[in-house]
Image 1 (cartoon, rainbow, N blue to C red):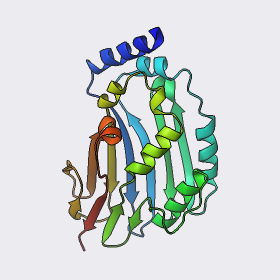
Image 2 (tube, rainbow, N blue to C red; image 1 turned 60 degrees about the vertical axis):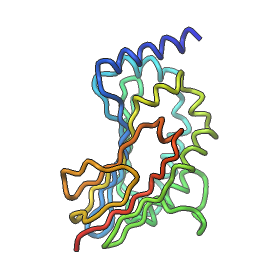
Image 3 (cartoon, rainbow, N blue to C red; image 1 turned 120 degrees about the vertical axis):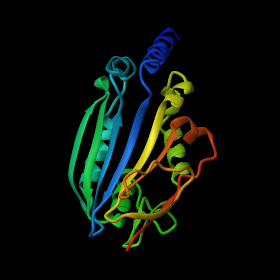
Length: 212
């Protein structure tokens, strides 16, 4: 109990000096519909907080999943930079197309993509579609007990999740549950707190239509 209180106190102190922690999932699509995937953390000067809350986290399973991912067809140049005590978390790789990206993600989780499973991403020359994957994420988080490892769910209010897409052509229209900040015509952003993701009735689906 004392340890949890200490961790929570550190986080709240940290939040008073910075906006928040942001987990960014970034997908860049090339003109040939191949792409680059990048999952990473953004924050300002919170190393002391991460050092306190990550000292007992075991990355063995994550490393195993990444090894499987790297072996999948259509996945190249997997690069990682992970040091949780310093708040460093980065996983990036190239993929040949959206279908291989979906198959690779399912394989890394120990499953085979079936026709009734949602695709992680759908891409063609006119649009980019990300289905609502919220239920999958919640199921996985509860299965792995990730929520129970958080000292207080209030922390989730200070952690933003950003889904970013960089398209090969200007974005014409985008359907989404919350309005993006789109100063760049090639960039789409969907942002919400992790607390909203787990507790609100969010539909995270997005449909991005591209100009010809």
